[in-house]
Image (cartoon, helix red, strand yellow):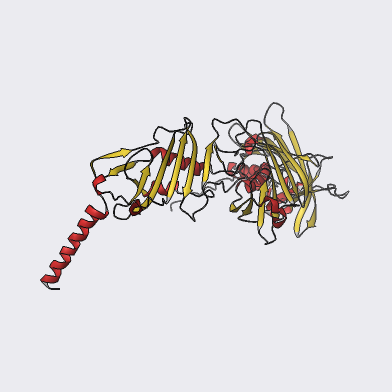
Length: 471
């Protein structure tokens, strides 16, 4: 490249730089102003936020604060905000808090130098704003933000604030945090509840109707059609299925077409009743398969039908055995004072606590193996429940375990494990806790796991090695 061409390119570069810095991108005032219009506004001051996006980016919507409004069953359950255009819609608390936090932290830089600002606002995209945010306070003070195009040179976006002359700049991250559609601020998990707030669940599915209650937190019971202790784990899994069910698509105003979504006569309905004063409210949700084969759900008072991200029919179809407590007894290793075994599985073993660890038939134990056995006993689960058992099911017990709990009452439980049976390819054994108790079914493998064997539980003598003798 010759000197003449090099010099020409340098001149072009200088001119382009001058144009960008002096003409195309107007300079800023020597003493710039940083405006934080909402820094003193908190959620108690904010009463509404209206968001209008560029044409084709979704319909405008208004978020209204509920903090100063009376309680209403139609309002959103788990948030201090609601969508004015969709009463009863669940909103994403985190997403709305992000919008509020962004407004409070919003810092506008400028204004740009008036001498270099073009009179034609289209140069900054402010004739047809990309985004308009109207914020209103409790005193009915209204502020409007119009966001224009992004300056690729300054890496910021032009913005106009009502009540303030001139054009300002704002960082792109703030624009992105506010540029949300109404679906962006909707809760994608509208059936979420806190387990400890639930007092009653009524589940109607192809397996029948079951009512579950929580009279004491973490203690669940099946109340109907019969009374049984329920498994906390199984009930928590049921609530987790509801809590984590994601919305793939919001179908607003589709409630008059329930038959299209299998919701006119739903096979599954879940009523969740919460404690008085819970931050959420009780709901009744229905689930179905649409004509397109997809899975849909809605809840009473919802303004929409929701297309679900997955089909949870199997997870919500529960029988009483599915939800019953499977643990034979609620014990931990620390609860056990003594275990006495019997039956044909092995010779009797008596395991007792000592001031230091355990004794096995009066012998020094190997604590590691004893505690593993006691842990297996404490966590023993049933495979299922039998309406009855053969007359000889417990005539010659395979195993008996008498467990004594620590404490002044020295409460005792006796588990009797009887003869084998085969069910669905599984080898099981009949079991019961009392002579007149309900017939349980335990896996043969699990029954054998809790059989105490003295030889495996006592401390083994350390062999001594004789010292070599010298010749």
